[in-house]
Image 1 (tube, rainbow, N blue to C red):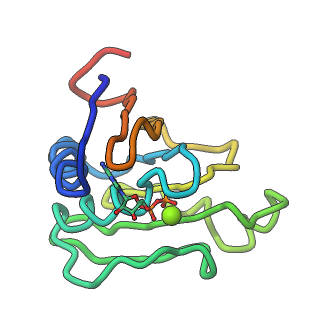
Image 2 (cartoon, rainbow, N blue to C red):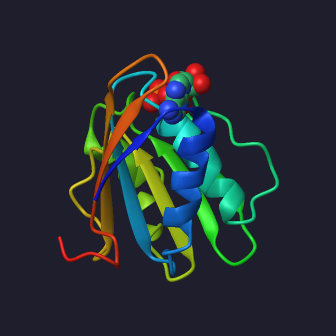
Amino acid sequence: MIRTTNSELETFALAEEIAHTLRGGEAILLCGTLGAGKTTFTKGLAKALGVTKMVVSPTFTIIKEYQGSALTLYHIDMYRIEDEDELYELGIEELYQKDTVTVIEWNKMQELPDRVIRINIDVTGENQRKWEISGLESDNN
Ligand code: ADP
Ligand code: MG
C-alpha cells in the first residue's frame, strides 16, 4: 500500500487507519530519515489505541511503554544501539506477546514476530511524506 500525507494531521489519520487493523503481537518497523515522521506516526497510533499519556521520542530511553485500552504499546528507538546484545539485556525478546504492539524506529533486531508491518517513509516535500506500507492483514504482500 502506498500513501501520501500532506500534514501531521493526515499522518495521524493514516496511523489511526493502521491501528484499527492491529490485533496484538505485531511489530511495526519504521524506516525513514530524521524528521521523516516516525515519532509523529507513533503518536497517532498511540492515540488510536487509546493511550492517554503523551508519547515522547524514546531516543534516550530506548524503550517506552504505553497502556492502550486493549493493547500495550512499546515504542523503541534503536538508533543508539550498537550491539544486538544490548537489546537482549533490555529484555526485548519478551516483547512480542498477544496483547502488545511494538513500534520500532531504526530496527536492528534479527528476531521478529510472525506479523511484521514494514513502513518506509520518504520526505517528498516540506509537509509531504510518502508512505510505503507492507505486511498489513488486509493486503497480500
Ligand atoms: P522522526 O521520528 O522520523 O525523526 P518526527 O516525527 O519526530 O520524525 O518529526 C517529523 C517532523 O515533520 C515533525 O516536525 C512534523 O511536524 C513534520 N511534518 C511535516 N509534515 C509531516 C507529515 N505529512 N507527516 C508527519 N510529519 C510531518
Ligand atoms: Mg523519532
